[in-house]
Image: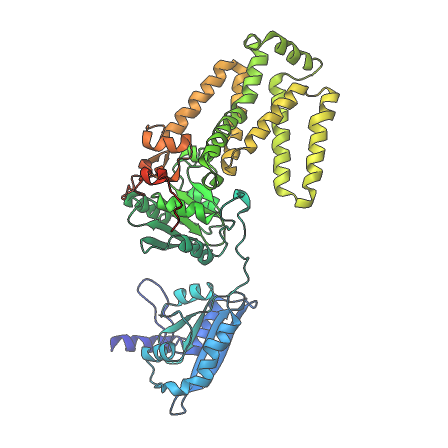
Length: 538
């Protein structure tokens, strides 16, 4: 009674304020029982000066006693499906509601009666907090305000233009699935659900960004993934307080164990088969609405050199290709520094004939080997960046211009030696063999640092740089898992999977590095693969 008296006093002090207006204890505004009050609040306060795609639809319906009920629909036209609104909300309210025999009494049951007995929308909920209603409207839902009801009907009417599921451009393979994640988080979820049809696949949803309200889903296998990993992922996501979340890279930097390191400790992928394989190994996957890239955690350093194509080819061939890739990564990182140190400090470590030809090709070049390698490196990275950003139609033109500049004109002009161009080309080709684009970019800074150390101290500087990088990598963690595992700490059972692609009939256990609950992946029975079958005539 006192509460009602206070409302009447407030009404006398402020005639424009309805006695049905309420405010929660934590300053959250409740919706009013009067539709006009809610419409005024939305138009004049929350969505003021917004005349774009926000739609208000007022209608009156009659109950079984021909009493009129005022209803207000509020939705964002660009985020909703007109057919759902017309066929599943407006049509039932205007043509089919009489058969429901709804009472006109102003109570919560009025909204629930309409939502449960009239509307044909699959997902219907009820809210009485205005802020929550606004968030739902901006997420593609339709808010249905009913005169006399303190609750608002929230109907799922999402529908907007989106790109169809297509190939993962950054992780192409000749064999295997050709589908990639979609910007729609529901479509990406469906791609994983199609591959893992198990109730053990769990999902936890977060909303990150005070203004962007970006949906983020964390996925894991309940009977496999270590609970400590999920707790740590949840803790880091809960601690975020930002305006917006644009892409996976932003989220990766904010929850990274080593945000100042050039090396990424979270695996970024656009492929649902890679994410599914990670889940079944005992990891967690993070899907982000609005981007095709997902995060897989934890991650190991050696995985930067493993391609999804490795699991769709015969293991004999993959063994050779994988070691070529390992050698190419070392060449792309150390060859410029090795060249500078040999030319500047240690010419005696190469054969005399080769040394004579190298120094002969450098005759007339005005720059020392160090500056030469810096120029070649900057040129090559500029061409690679240009090829990645310019339209596809101009890609061949850039390749021709780059080849002419680096391959002929620069050498003829005497700016760079022919051996310098060869060193730069071999370094670039070797970097192309690295399957992880993010890792390729991570190697650029250490490569230049090694080259500078080689110019200052020769091979001693290169070795010092290598030791510092190994020390840095050994100190890194990825959600509690050592980054250099299974090499440091050494795990023989896991390291053989990186030396070569283990045949599938020998993959009995999950990686020990992730401390999975269920360590047994399958029961390898080698004998069944060596049976000699006979075709017998019956």
